[in-house]
Structure formats: structure tokens, C-alpha cells
Amino acid sequence: MQQLFRRGDRGPAVAEIRAKLERLGRLDPVGGENLTNQTDILFDDVTDYAVRSFQQERGLRVDGVVGPETYRALDEAHWRFGDRLLSYRPGHPFIGDDVTTLQQRLLDMGFDPGRCDGIFGRATEAALQEFQRNVGLRSDGALGPGTLRALEQLRRTVTGGSPSARREEERLRRGHGALAGRIIVLDPGHGGSDGGVAANDLVEAEIVLDLAARIEGRLGALGVTTYLTRSADTCPDDRERAQFANDMAAEIFVSLHLDAMATEHASGAACFYYGASRHGRHVRSAVGERLADLIGREVATRTDLVDGRVHPMTWELLRLTRMPAVRLDAGYLTSPSDAARLATPEFRDALAEAVVAGIQRLYLPEHLDVPTGQFRMPALSN
Image (cartoon, rainbow, N blue to C red):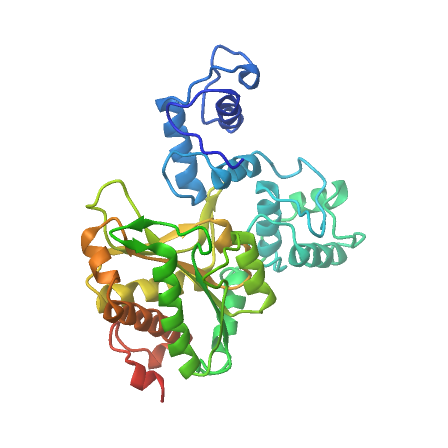
């Protein structure tokens, strides 16, 4: 679904959206009729509230608009554990809440399917095969009736935090806090014919590409191998950007954006990482959360942008990257004050140094860390 649907819209697509929300128990049926056959169903206030509530729970932007991300999440949410046979399908993976439940159960028992992202990939298949070998089942990597029964019968057997979080943290310890030799992918948003937000004589795609170049230069001076997901003339989609980072075996992924609102009073910077609630449990990238917090605090301290803080999200760009990933929204172009700052090279330099300082602090042992705002590039170059 590429079209956007919001309060006030009518038609078959709205009826389908309402039907999905009904199946999830978030809306009551209208007159007991089959809504998917109706052409005059209204996206009313009740539907808007149900959509916003669903978006908040799933780690999506809470705007009441059903676009590709929200529609995808509605589709995934209706799958329950045991509803279907699951297995690894290259190029066309099973995606849904049943996969998330499978991944969580494997993690609870000490088998590592990678991030709990609801995508049945190679790591999930390998973890399921290992579980099957341990319980004496045929290790075909498929969730069939026998494997499902075994998973239902066994209870949690591992404690001490998420294995996926521990694995992410182990990667940080390599290199004793040094950045030299690491691989980082920077993702300036939009590009090509998609300029993103345009306001106050500034264009988002141009600003974030310039910011990425400033960050790249500083990281390069520290011995980091840095790749950008796009040039000035290209605009890969989110899946292509995530796949590029995965193919480059990046250790960190930082996406750069600017924001917009109908009112000029909205201002400030915010950071986002992969995380959401699923059936009473919180799934997240622990290192992604830490990196988002470090970058967010450095930006707030080194600039006078309002601190929009750190938030978990399940956007595809954060979900499909296999390394800790964050998105920095570095101000509102629709805010005259933010735009005036972003227009100056000096301010973009301050933003670039904030991002680099946050990344450096992520890799430092706790006893060598410094207070927010006190890292300087000369010190980082030593």
C-alpha cells in the first residue's frame, strides 16, 4: 500500500484497515457486516484513535496515518504463534508476530536467533535447528507440529539478560575502545529527485548529505572506514539502504534526517533506535539504544537545539539493519530558529562533532568515558 489514508477518508481501503483493526480487537464491528465489501466506510475519530494506539504500541510514528509502514505492521500483527508452518525462505521470508514469539522463546532457552525483529532469517533457522538437535527432533529448521509442541512444553531456562544484547555488547569490546579499523555506514536521508523537507530556503537532502560528509571526514581522520548509502543523485529505498549496510558488514549505522511540522513552533533534535513492545515484552537493540542516547545527549549539549530525547521505533531502516542502528532527526526545517542554525557551516560542524563524540564514547570502557560535551576532536585524534 503506497497511498496514505487518514481521518475523513472513505472507501474499500478504509474498510480493509478497519477490518484489520477489528481482528486485532482494537475496533468493534459496525453493524456486524463484512466491512471489506463496503465502499462508503468512514475513517472516523474512533478509527483514528485505534490507529494511533496501534502505532504507539508498535514503535511507529504516531500520526494516525496508515501508510506502508503501518499497513505492514497491521498485517504482521494478526499472526499468532502456531498459526502457520514457519521456515527459512530466501528472498521471501516469513514476517509476523508469530516469528517474533518464536525468536523470543529461542532466546529464553539460550539459542540465538539474532535480533527479535519478526523476520525468519538464516540466524533464526540456525537457532531453531540447534534447538531441534537438543531436544532430539529432526533438525530441519522448520516450525512444524512436533517442534511447536516441544517449544510449548519447555519453559524459560536462561537468565541474565538477552543473548542478542550481550552479543552486541561483546562486539563493542573489540579494539579496546579504538575507532581505527572499524566500519561505519552513514545514511543521509532522501536524495536524487526526493529532496525530503523543503522550508525556509533549505532542502533536507542537501543539508544531511553535507552533514554526512562532515562526519565522514572526522571519522576518516580517526582511521574509520566510512561508507555513505547514497550520492547527491541517488535515492535508494530503506530496504536497499539497510542491505547496503549489511553487505558492508558495518558495525554501526547512523541515518541522518530533518523534520517538519505544520506549525513553526515545533523544534529540536531527537534520536531513534530499534525497539517496540510485543505481547507485553519489550524487544530492542540495547546497543542501538545506548548509541542513540549518547548522540542525543552530545547534540543537546553541543548545540542549543531543544532536546527531543530518545525513542524506540520499528521503522524498516532500523529493523532490517543487522548492526546497532540509530536515526538522528537533527532539527525542524519548518522552525525558523532551527533552520537558521542548520544553514550555517559552523553549526553543521558542531552537529558532526556531536555524532562522532557519541560514537567514540560508545566504544570506550566505562572507566575511560568522559562527561557529555567534553570530547574534542584533538583528543579523539590521539
